[in-house]
Image (cartoon, rainbow, N blue to C red):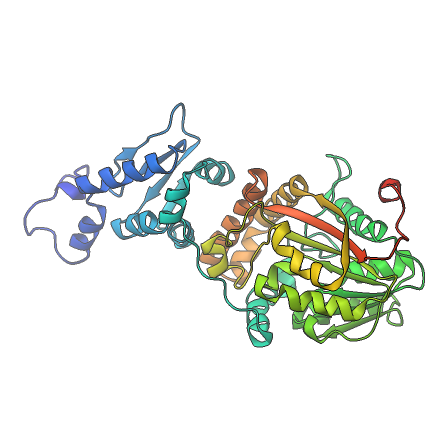
Length: 416
C-alpha cells in the first residue's frame, strides 16, 4: 500500500485490527461536514478553521481564520457538537482536539455572540454541585488542595489567587497584588486596632497585609487545609501571630463581632441558594458601625459557570449577578455604598498567570501529567478570554449598616 494513500480510501479486508480501527476513526462521512457547517453557522460563523479527522477543512467565517482546531476522531467531533463547552474542554485536555495557533485568540474567536435559542440548545451548563458543609469541603479540596508547591510556581510571591489591581499598565503582578490589598483596605477605611473577620482567606496574604500595614486584628476562616497550614507558618515567621488567627473552618461557623467583614474571592463558592445564610453571618458579626467588602467574580445576567470548568476545575462554583447578590444585604438592613467592576484587571491577571504557568510547564508536567497541563492551560486561557469579552465581571461591593455614616464623602481616600 503506498504510504501516501489516506486510510479513509483503503478498501476491502486488507486492513485489520488496529489499522482498521484507525481507518474507522479517520474516515469522515458527508453528514460530518454538513453537521459541522450547520453548527458553525448557528454559532455565529467564528473565524476558526475546523479540520475533520480525515484532514478535510470546514470554515464558515469571513476573512483569514485566527487558527485551526482538528478533531482526531468522530466521537470527539460529535461530543463537541452535542455539548460544545464540555466537548471542547475534554477533547483538548485529552489531546483529541489539536490546536494550531494561539489558544487564547482561538478561544476568544470561538465565543462569538449567539442567538438565545442556540445558547439554550448547545450551551446548557451543568447544575453546580451543592455547597453544603460537606459539599463545600469536597469542592474546595478538589481545587485548592492540589499542593502549595504547584501554586507557588506561577502565582505572585505572596500567593494571591484573586484578581489583582494594576494602578498602571506597566505594573508587575507582584505590585498589582499589593495594590489590590491596599485598595480593599482603603475602601473600608480600615483603622489601627480594628477587628476584622475574613471569610475565605486563601494563603493568608490579605490577613497579613491588614495586620502589618493597617494595625488590624484579624480572624481568617478557610476550609482548605493546605492553605491554612501555609498561612499559619508565614504569619509565625513574620511575627504576626498575636494579630492574626487562622481558623480552619467554614464561614457558617464564624462567631464574634467585628468592625469589618471582608471576603475576597470566596463568594463564587458559596452558591446563590446560600446567599441569605451568608448575609445572616454578616448580620450577626457587624455592630452598628460595622462595614465590609465582598470581592467576587460575577456576571451581567444569570448564567451558570462554563460547564467544563464546573466539572473539572471549579466544582460547585457560581458567579452571581449584582441582583443575585442582594439577598446578602437587603434582608439585614445593610446598605450598598460602592460598587466597582475590575473586569479589565482580571483579564490582565489571568494572562500573567498563564504566562508564568507556561514558563514552569515542565515542572507542572513532572508533578502531574500532560492532561493536567492541558486542562490548566485551557482554564487560565479561558479565564482571561471570559473577562476580555465580558462573559465574566469582577465586582467589589462595599457595604455597611444602614445608619452608619462614617465613610468619607468622596472616593479620594481610595486613590490616595
